[in-house]
Length: 629
Image (tube, rainbow, N blue to C red; front, top):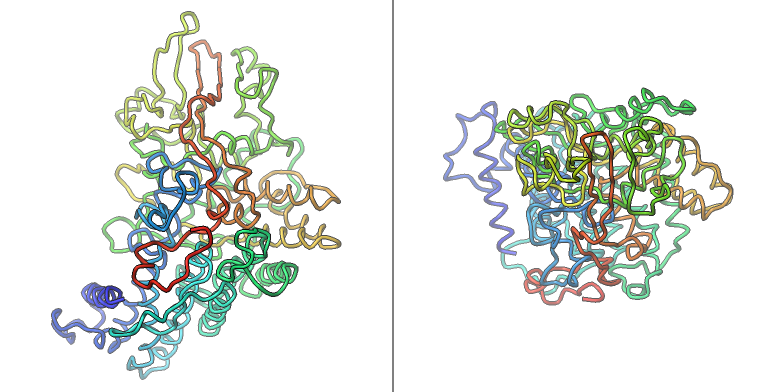
């Protein structure tokens, strides 16, 4: 804990040095005399301290959102992290307190590292304990202090909320730790106590926050969305006694109340947002019935509408409830390098978090029917001559798919941004090359695709399974040189609608159609026709399919697979999609299940929760470990 106190002092010094010249710089003490008292002696310095708490809301001051170089989505059936797959320990040798992997051992990844988050909780507690000491005289400054309190409560709720979703019951404290404090009496609170603590912080945040918050800062709607997200997780099977290993452990399972009541609480929390209690939100684009049939222009329009949600700059869209904003490198603010993290290696990018073949197949056809690979050649191979493709474009597995597919996945032949100078002559059409080019007569390869691991640009960063993630990236940004300015959306309205739909479907009865109506709003916006059913089990599968495609790679899948207790059902090896494009226009697509890019095995029910790391247990040996570790 002494390390935490020292950390706070360092942060205070950094913030004071970085304070704007407008904050009476000539009246400040010398740098070597800065201390905690100085931070709370001036409202400008206190505001700067709060700013650094924002920066560390997800642990790491450099990457200030859940959007990281290694996505949690690569720890599900959605994607493959090509650089550090070993850190997703629930797929590898059994997770242990000595090796928590993604949530402990790398700054490329986790938004919920225990030690980093608790360091910032200490910062927030320090601020809340001292903010009333800040000398203010004017009404605007008094209002500013009240607003800062609301922001601090929101930040603490976000941090505790992210930890709660990963570890369950937590060490709860609303006061800063002190030197000399006896830490051997500290224990973890129960799952319910921790949730109650977070919800109380959300109530406090809402009470202090004004209606007119500056974009990018905490707001009442963000508080409500956080509450809705946590209550939705609380409604799942994982925490309601359906897993034998954890059912009797209050750290990770509720020991009282009913799951039905928790589903109703989730429904009501989503509905409060939908009703405009915290502001007006709507899906971007039309929710009217889509054209039938869809032309290619229609498909392109719906795909472009969806894609632009994730590369927005400037004023937030009607769907954005809360987002992290970025600035150009060197300007002293948050930075994002999404293009270089995720982009194709043929653009001098690093090609991380690549969609898996089973994930690609989950995207429907444009008419709303399931995609079916087998066209008479089995489930692994498809071939088509140039003439066959001209007569029937659906011979290609990438034609005729729903619009969100084209906004989410980069596949062989997909159009993308301008190639860098050293590749422009090789690819004047600016189309993704995750396959190779062959001579139809000899069958010999005549050229390696620029975006493969045999390409001429940066082979070592190439996809290992045949795809790249398009979502979040901006085709106008040269990732090798420039940072991204598009926002990362932490809470968006589509998540609220789908969680509301799920709660209604789970309640069943007359609620079932209400849930389907909400689900169909999301489908219609995506250019897909309505789902119609009177069967709860079918509606549940529709909902899970819709969440997969709509929220793909946004991080919710990891929570959902755990909530539904179906993680073990979706785990399979990640294998390579091999594409051959012949110089006469003939094509071959082969899903090579012998070419294993990542060997995955579900390691057991204990992996539904992450263990507290050994280093943290050593600091406080009395802390109870999660079950199974």
